[in-house]
Length: 134
Image (cartoon, rainbow, N blue to C red; front, side):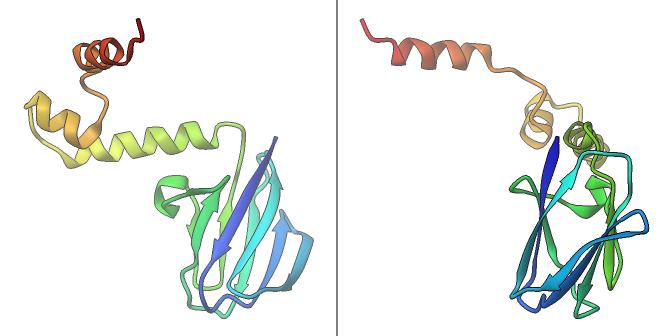
């Protein structure tokens, strides 16, 4: 399995990709780069220029929060491990921190913020009935 990693920032102009200590590729760019990283337990380091920018990061076209994704973001590079469970761990981290941020026993508020409380079966049934073609 391969992941598509994209970095973008208006000032991004050069990069180097390392897998462990091996240089994989390097080049110049005009605001964004797209790299293909294999699923593995190897730490990938993406060095970028200019330093002291904070590029946005997409993994398989999904904009990720570096903290939730376990991406170490420095002022000159990022370190990431993209294994087969990357998106599962990302979702678990997202739900964990959402649950930590709310201290309410109200099911409606919990469902509104977290989004996993009520499966809304009655609403789904109503929608399915309304869409049914006789």
